[in-house]
Image 1 (cartoon, rainbow, N blue to C red):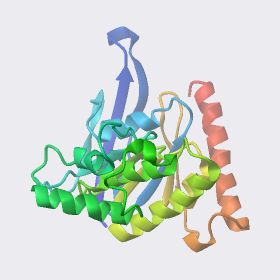
Image 2 (cartoon, helix red, strand yellow):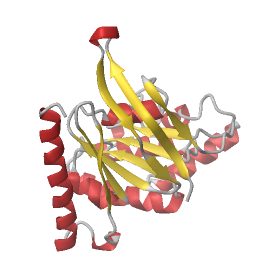
Image 3 (tube, rainbow, N blue to C red):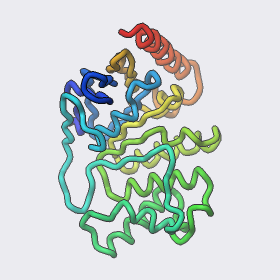
Length: 256
């Protein structure tokens, strides 16, 4: 498969001139079309920052990013889902999803079709006319995913989208996301602090660590998804990544 995202010696720094702090450097990652990659790492290593650089919300200090997707006026190549759904309370659910479609070339009829099709996809077909306060936290997060999918991106960037949810809701949405991914074939880069979530969802788990941070491990998760969530082999893979994270924390604390 061809890579849809490639970063080349990427570096980001915050601050001014001599006081600038390099968050990460020499960052080289490649994500293939249709691949689900999860990103874990030391706190402050720049996981969320990386997503913002890829989505062109932050400019890198050095290096570059190649986004290898078709440029089509009626779509956006990249969409992002945040930890909070950030729905506008004065807009209906349908109007919140439509917000993502503003600024791209789609007709009013096409907007209506995309709003309904994404609501169908996330399992909330009948809520277009409701208001955000009428939905649960898990439902609001599904709407955040629907809003991102409505622009028909090739790449979905997800910044701890389930981090604020209770365990039962989170588990259910993980399964829902895998179903949506299987149906849409999007390329996903998913940031999480939860190692079990990373191993459960990902084809690969990237571990960010060091100071400045870089990718210190790239774990291939080969266990069949039907056997994930529990079982000895799944737990062994979780422990493998946890061990790597503890080593990365030690490396970061020592300034390496």
